[in-house]
Amino acid sequence: MRTSEKPAVDAAGLAGPASRKLPVPPRERKPALAALAVLLILGGALATTLLVMRSGDRISAVRVTQQIGAGQQFTADALEEVQIADTGLDYVSWAQRQQVLNSFAAVTILPGTLLTNTMGVRASSELVPGKAKVGLALKAGQAPAGLRQGDRVQVVYVPARTSQAESRVLADKALVFSVGAPGRTGSSGGNGLITVIVDATASPEILRYASSGEIAVAELPGAR
Image (cartoon, rainbow, N blue to C red; front, side, top):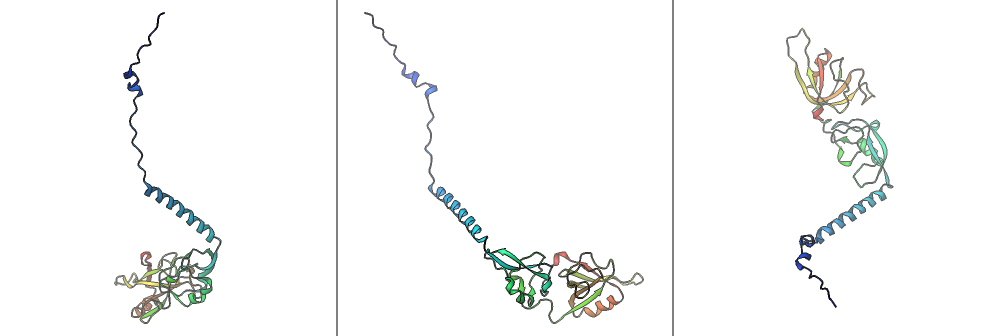
């Protein structure tokens, strides 16, 4: 009886290149980063929940509809009531509008601004002793288009062509108190009437040149 012997398995063959695997380094766990990620997720969810809950809480606030220059008094036609979400910010409520009408703008306030308590002051920085309100009747070309109350302008002496004098600035950064005829504060002008606040010492000279049509104003957008 013949017995067949099985060939020996080469141990080296099983450990050949095809069966070798590179060692995989163990993953380093960072529990601190994982905890931070969880906190961020929870914080975002909480903030979203608060916003959704507060979106139903509405308050009555004051919104400015016309530009109001720094130092200028608030007027009734420049304010309107709006309903906004109660976000906890220091907005002036509509119930306080009478107090607003008795105060003055601390800074130039643009249309569409929701009023906060820091935007108003009890005393004007412009309507004080040493200042004067001067009315000017300007012709076409003597004032820029779109001039509005609250703008800052230079009041310039522009001599007649027959004069040998040179142009010069009579008042710098003068506040435009109103534009248009009385009772139409905040209008776009039309008839060329504007009222500016200047130093009282400069008002006589400005009025003298204004009476002869030798006054022009230049807007200073960056001086608001």
